[in-house]
Image 1 (tube, rainbow, N blue to C red):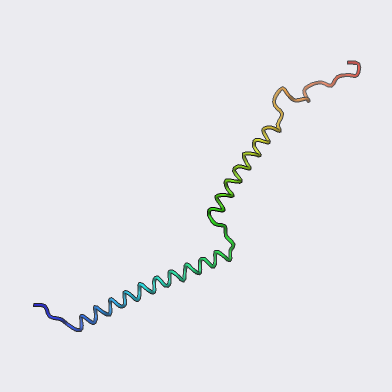
Image 2 (image 1 turned 180 degrees about the vertical axis):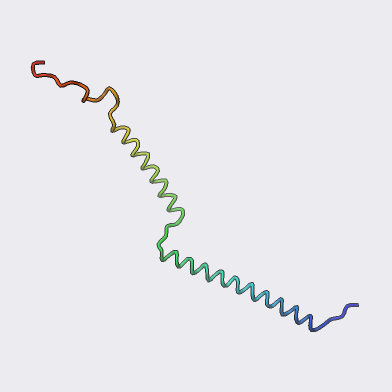
Length: 91
């Protein structure tokens, strides 16, 4: 036969309530911290990840274009006009 002890029942209710309160306080602290971090990030004017990735892709494309233009600009061997001696007026 099991007896009910009112002191233990009250203690169980008290600890259950304390755990619920602690969990709610933890969630509230987490929400407040996240809001503060979002506010801080907004004030710092930071870029978002997708904007950074788009910028990286654009820079890579521009670097490839610059490399192509440099390759087209450099004279190829045998096509330089500096290697041909100038002709005399007498010919």
